[in-house]
Length: 513
Image (cartoon, rainbow, N blue to C red; front, side):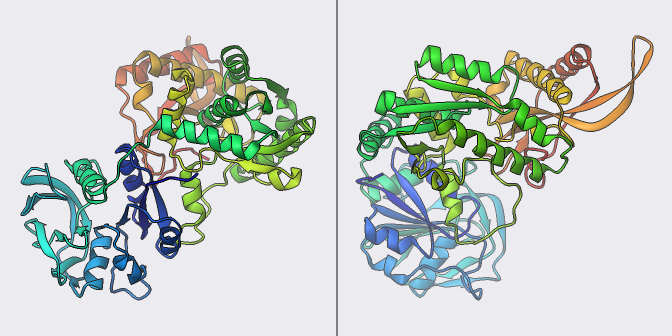
C-alpha cells in the first residue's frame, strides 16, 4: 500500500523496536520497520519524513556490530537515534562511546537543558527509562547536549541545523513518563508530518487497493472466526461484495459452540455467503494417539490444507486467496538476525497459493493486532468478536496435553467455557490478553461426597501483554479464581483439581504446547 508520508524505523535488534512503531502509529503517523542492512533501499525507493534508529543489544565497537551506511546521515532527512541509535550517531560524527561506563537499567530522572524542540512541553525534570551498558563520553562535533541525568552527562544531543537528535533513554516504553510527547515533537514538529493515519483512512485505501487488484476476479477467504480472519472477511466483503467466497472448517478442536456462532454471525449479521464444512471426524482420526505437540500442529496444518483445497475447488473462478498476515509476521520474515530457533510452528494456509495457482491478498500485512481490532470496530464488527482473546490455529489440540480424543476435548470445552464466563462476569476479560484452560495428562486423588475420586487436573492460564511477544501472568482476584474452581469441579465430570499458572513469558511460553 502506498503512503504519501511515513517514518522509517531502522531496526538494530532492540526488544522495543516494534513498540517504537506502535507509538508512532498511535500518534496518527504511518511508519515501517526495516532491518539495518535493507533500510537504505527502502529510504531511496520512497523518501520518509524522518528516520528513527532503534536501540540494540550490541556495542558499537564490537566486531560485527550492526551499522547503517553513513549515507543515511547525509540525506537531509531528520534522524532520531535511540540508545544504540544515539551511539551510532556519535561514532559517525567523531564522538566517543565509553564501553566501560556505568551500566544503567531502570528509571532515571532526566534533567532537560533545552526545551525548544525535541523536549518542547516536557517537564524540566522528567522520569525516563534507561537500558544501556555503553554511554557517550565525548559529544560529537556540531552537536550540543540538550539533556542529562546524574549518571549520563550526555543523555540527549542535537544538531539543530541537520535535524539530527539522539537520546540515551527509551521514549517508546510506558516507563518514560513523557515519551509520547517526545516522539510527537520529533514526527510532527521536526519531521513535519501531517498525520492522518487512522482506521478510517486505512479502510478507504485498502478498499481502493483491493478493488484495483481483484478487478472482476473472485477471492476465497478461510474464515476461522478469529479476529484477523473475521475483520479481513468483512473488509473484503465491503470492497468486492459477492466476489468473496468464505469457507469455515470445523476441525473438531474448537471452543464450545464455536462453529455455530461463526456461521450465525456472518450469515445473519453481515450477510456474507459462507460455506460450512464439518471435518471434525477426519481431524480427530488423524490426531488419534499423537502426543508430540509439533506433530499435532503439522497434522492439523496438512489436514486443513487438504480439506480447504478440496472445498475451494468448487469455486473455479477464484483467482485470489485472502490471508490474515500481520505486520509482525512480515517483520520477522526479513529480520536481520537471521534464522532463529523454532519455538513452535505456526498454523496457517501456507502452501495453498502455489498449489492452487492463487494470488495472495493480505490486507493486514502492514497492521499490528491492536490496529486490526480498531479497523474491525470502524467496520462495525461487534465487540464480542473484535475483543476476543487470541486462539491458536491448532485449537484445543495443543491444550489437551498428550493424546487427543473426543471425550477429553469435550471435557476441556466445558472447563474453558466456565472459565471465560466467570472472568467476563467479574469484569476481568478485557484486562487480560489471553485466558484459557489446559487439560493435564495427570490424575490425582480427591474426595467427593465421602467417596474417593481419581480424576483429571486442569490448569488455568491468563496473561497480560501488549502483543504476545512478552507476557506476565494476570492477577485474577482470589474470589474469582475460587468461583471458577468450585464451578469446574462441581459441574465438569472427570475433574477434581484446578491449578493456576503463575509463570511469565519468558521464560515460559503463553501456550503450554
